[in-house]
Image (cartoon, rainbow, N blue to C red):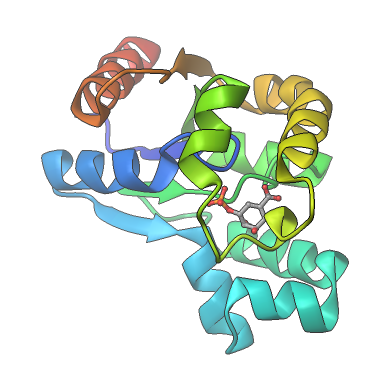
Length: 173
Ligand code: S3P
């Protein structure tokens, strides 16, 4: 049986962590959230790293954490929304396993994240504009990183999880 990792990429609020947890339970794979690993490594929450050390330091930690996962098998890896920004990261992600891109409409993303307090990039007077701009910039990068993509708008997370598993099986068939 294929025991490769499943890597979830996509914008904030597309369900990477919640779908990832579900898939890990379905497969009895370990669940890994790169933001959690970054926070552990830095000894501070992501929002504090952004506020006190800046986005570049966070991105360096993100690259370190992604590299540290290589060689692992049978993991479901949920990445942060900006994990695809660096070319180096996109290559690491594809080496880690099957890369599934979860997407959602701008409206749905805004609805899902607008009350979130732990997302530093959205602590701004106009989060909607930040979402629109970053989505536009990142869409080609997500597509370059992913083996497959799925629009989660209005789709229950168990259906999304099943779709990822089917696509992964087909990818390795
Ligand atoms: C980020 C997304 C966040 C987190 C950090 C930066 C981004 O992860 O990595 O706040 O650049 O889009 P989620 O996508 O899990 O919210």
